[in-house]
Structures are given as structure tokens and as C-alpha cells.
Image (cartoon, rainbow, N blue to C red; front, side, top):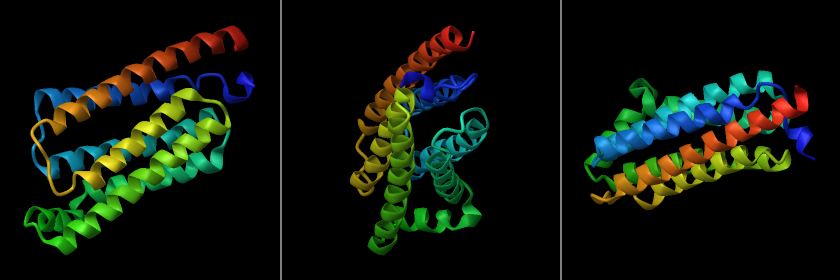
Length: 190
């Protein structure tokens, strides 16, 4: 039922995701990232901020809290590991840039499984409560994780633009869904 997935003031969570995705898209369009370091660091920042938003969102919408907490925790850990060089990511990124197969293999598996778990937990939590903005965000997060594994060795000149388009469309969809959810919540909760 629709009312199970809604709680007052929960509409802003997909709105924040949408704005972050559009900002990410702008970065890809206006400053194309041709190095693996830039792409991965941006995704790490996205996952880190996404984990914070998911944790704060638990206070406003506690439905499926176990999945949301799991997704937030994985998102925070993977994001922090990538963004903060002291967490060991910088060594692996430098190894990947030197084309060291052992480093790049380890790096791709850590990133892809982190991204897939973040996306999968968001997708499952959203699907269980029929929250289509969360379902779409989960799918986008899984696509971002898959992007890393399939493009870890080769980053072509068009990849940043394709990636930017995916982020832009996902951001627009999340914002539209958030505004529609706000309208429905106003109708239901007054």
C-alpha cells in the first residue's frame, strides 16, 4: 500500500540525491574526467555523502531501517575508503595508474562489490516499501558499481559524457519523484 512507504517529510531524501546526481553530471560534462582517479574519487564522494543522507533519512522514514542502515554503512565505508587517502585507497589508485594487474584487480573488486551492495540495499529497501525513488536510485548506484568493474582498465573519451548523462537523467527522475512524493504526502498527511 502506498501509505506504508510514506512518512511526513521523507520526500526530501530523493530530492537531495537528485541534486547530488545533477551536480555530478555537471562535473562530468564541464570537466570530463579522463583519469580513473577522478572518476573513482567522485563516486567515492557520492557514496560517502549518500551514506550520510541515508543515515539522516532513517530519522524521518524508519521503514525498512535494517536495509537502509546496511546500505548507509556500506556506502559510508566504501566512500570514506575511496575519498580519504589515509584509508589505503591512494596506494591502490596509484597502483592502478601504473597498470599493476594485482592492484587494479583488487581495486575493481572492492569498488564493484561496494557499489553493488550500496545499490542493492537501496533497491531492496525501496522495493519492499514501494518507494520508487529509492528503487531508481538503487538501480543507478548498481550501474555506477558495474561501471567501475567493466571500465577499470580502459577509460575512453566518451565515458565521462555517457556517465554524466546517466547521472543527469537519474537526478531529474529523483527530483521529479521527490516532488510527486511531496504532493502525495501533503494530500495524505495534510
